[in-house]
Figure 1: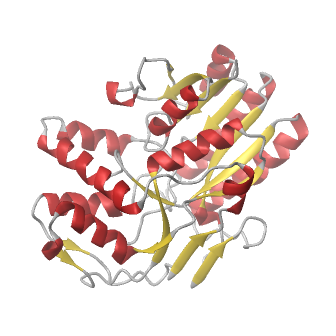
Figure 2 (figure 1 turned 135 degrees about the horizontal axis):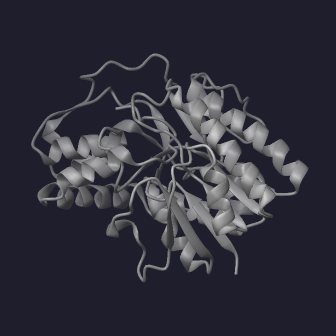
Length: 330
């Protein structure tokens, strides 16, 4: 049986990968710097948990020696909204990731899938991202650190004989999302009876529900596909339509104020993904529509905020370490 180690397993994306990886018949080992809550564990508690801080020198090597995984799904990174674009923690995670890969290769690892970001691409006013064709020219430290890791990991994998795939994550949303991001931020404001101030919403993005994205990563890990792949739904939608879906799910459209915030001049008007590699080579397609995904997210926040554990939910979401495509424009 193949043995996979999942980093960032308590994070926004990582927690959702555990069930599909178990369903695929893999022996799943999950690592987190925090103790997992029961909500993270898939049915049957079949995941084997490990507590480690990958930023501590020597922790990656010790973890790999203990688990000896054949497969690696590396999702951990620093992703605090509003900060991660420029944080020097990106350099720490670049170094930690290289240490992890080196230990994985030295222990006989066979296949690694790492999470990248659409922020690696050069963003122009209208950008349709195609692997191998769209220029890679990150404009932020976050994107540059991710791209640097990809370049180094690719050379390393070729030299040591490890199969490597690199999944560039686009805009995502869903339960356990950081409360400051688009869907969760608007949903919580409306659920609390507060106004949700937004831009005009003309920006077009490729949004993907988090469980769909996690299933895509699980499918990619189980495949033999290598190289960079766009991890997205392939279904562009305007930010205004996303906000409208949230307003419909919360039954509070009167509280949305489109155009109350200025547009961010550095953001592209359109940022979309070509997903032919993901669909044709990996064989994965999304299963959750925007309306269904938004409804699920709203209901999760409704239940979380209504219960005594709302503060815990916020703490978990804010502490989660998982890759993100970037803050969605509101």
